[in-house]
Image 1: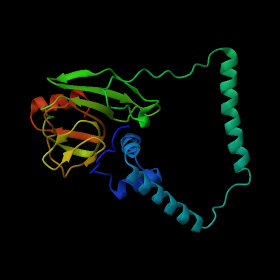
Image 2 (image 1 turned 60 degrees about the vertical axis):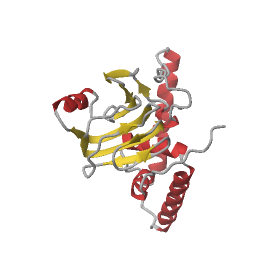
Image 3 (image 1 turned 180 degrees about the horizontal axis):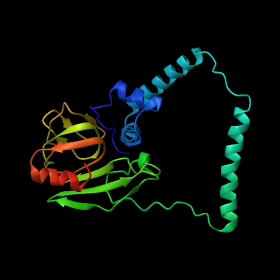
Image 4 (image 1 turned 90 degrees about the vertical axis):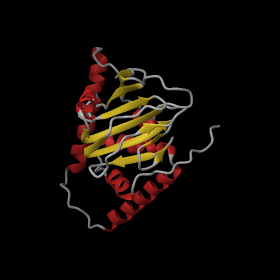
Length: 230
């Protein structure tokens, strides 16, 4: 059994509240869900927020509903099931096949939050740097990707025109603010100007999502950002 992770960096309560309320965009939600897989403390915080939300909901006055609301809902469910049965009978229904994820080093696990998503093979973007585009079913606009950066390598210096969430699943990096290791979570926005540098001795693999764009310093770095859709 692997030893428990010494997780030091967690999502803020405001972010977890957005997750619980359903307001978090799907790309950011997948990265946050990846953190929850690894962090019992944050799972407890989410459970508490959901319990509080249930109490608040129970205290709200009942909303008026149309008298045939239940019947219409059941009819829609039946319509979907009938469509699938008809496709099966006609031989036109095929289960969605998800390609195998890109290989990870021993000790790194593919996040359960990304099950059902497809990911490209590792693609070269520079010496010691590779990336994989993650495609989210029914949400092609979600900007989710994996980064695999070699020991001692670094990403170009950049800031953010939006929100960037990063979950470390293997290795460590330092960006001038803090050291991030396996299980750690980071949120960066327009107030953060940083350059993640991978620690010597081990490569680093992260899953990240971006809402908005990153703004890289220098022309070559901006080309790098456009290459991976950042």
